Image (cartoon, rainbow, N blue to C red; front, top):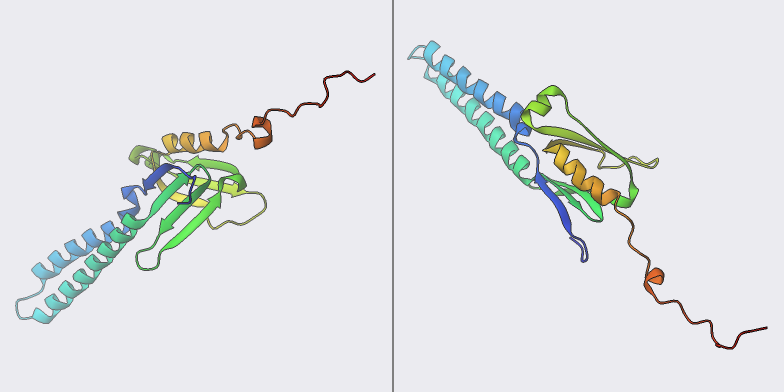
Length: 173
C-alpha cells in the first residue's frame, strides 16, 4: 500500500470458487475406485495409468487451491484492488475516484452459499477491474465500500486556513 492509504476491506474469495476443481477431483477419485474394482488383476498397467491420471487431477486441484488462496480483494480509502496469481502475480486496480457505479448481484444459490458478484463501472472506460466474482458476505462489503465512495469529500486546505485580514481597520469611504 502507499503511504496515507488505509485498508478498509481485505477479503479472500469465497471457498465456493473451488467447486469446479473440487468436483473434478472427487469425480476422478470415484472413477479411480470404479476402475480399480472393474479391471482384472492382470491389467496392472491400466490401474497405473488411472492412478497417474488421478494424481494429475489432484495436482490440478492443489494448484487451483493455491491460486484461490493467493487471490485477494482489497478496498482501501483510495482504490479497489484484486491481487491474483501464484507464480506471476497480477494486480488489477481502480481508483475510487473513477468508480461511477457499483452494484452486486446474488442469485438464490449464491445467497444460500453466502457470496455475490460485484460489478464496477467507470466513465466510458473499459477497466481491468470490472467484475469481481465470489465475494463473501457481499451485503457487508458493499456497505463498507459505499461508505468510502459516498463519504463527504475532505475539506480543502484553503477551507481550513483562517481567512486573511482585509488590511487596514480604517473604513474606506
